[in-house]
Length: 301
Ligand SMILES: C[S@@+](CC[C@H](N)C(=O)[O-])C[C@H]1O[C@@H](n2cnc3c(N)ncnc32)[C@H](O)[C@@H]1O
Image 1 (tube, rainbow, N blue to C red):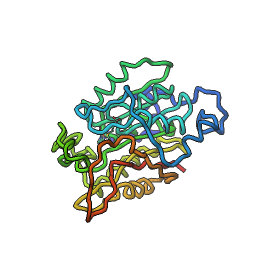
Image 2 (cartoon, rainbow, N blue to C red; image 1 turned 90 degrees about the vertical axis):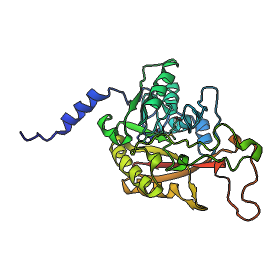
Image 3 (tube, protein in one colour; image 1 turned 90 degrees about the horizontal axis):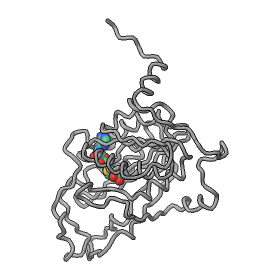
Image 4 (cartoon, rainbow, N blue to C red; image 1 turned 135 degrees about the vertical axis):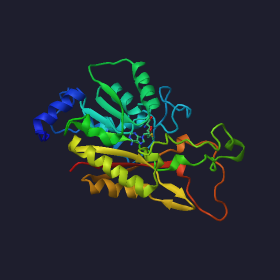
């Protein structure tokens, strides 16, 4: 028997069955406001160079996950681009940092990760904290490419994430920028890739990676509300003494599927870099990649 084509309503009820999560404002801010911030609080976020600090609630154990960002990072963007009660998406949620930030701020959130070990950890992490209101934070163990199967169109106010940086973690860790006496810590020469799954973006070279990111963000696009923002934290790579402009590839891939680049912020990581060794002297000038990362801010025009 030929399959009946799904109508818009069928599609909606299917998705409602799949993930029942709220996305509407619960605050009483004016319709025109893009967030619940006061003018004084807004000023902090308009600075294009941002510093974030890890706290005791952050996960910094590389045996749990090799590349977490601090809770303060998604917090800054959730405050900037959502209201209380709205919905946040993280397609590459790892240990659940974005979901924890959303929970602390009274926002609903959904996060995806390919690796079960990480999604199990993220759920446990969330279960250890108290829910202060009726919001939900849901962890899904699946490929980010499937986001559309779980979330209804135009319900997401903000997508904020740190995806793998292509094959950056797929090489033995040499800690070259560290002082020689500190280089040989327990992670020296370890490959810290997330998984060997061919769908894992961390296994792909940059052109293939950008293509895969484009495919994923094509699925994310219809889920975002009009003028909703999409933040991607990424860094460039060095490969055989050449800089590979991962952030440029990503901008092209996202613009191709309809997003528009609004801002580039720099995550100033100098507060996180200790005991730096001399690097490249005296013949090869390369800035220390570990001192900053990009925060690309797109919106759905
Ligand atoms: C940089 S980490 C995110 C870390 C997270 N921000 C945190 O604080 O824990 C990137 C994550 O993307 C996941 N990943 C890679 N490819 C994926 C895919 N196709 N779909 C979903 N998750 C994927 C990896 O397992 C990894 O946990």
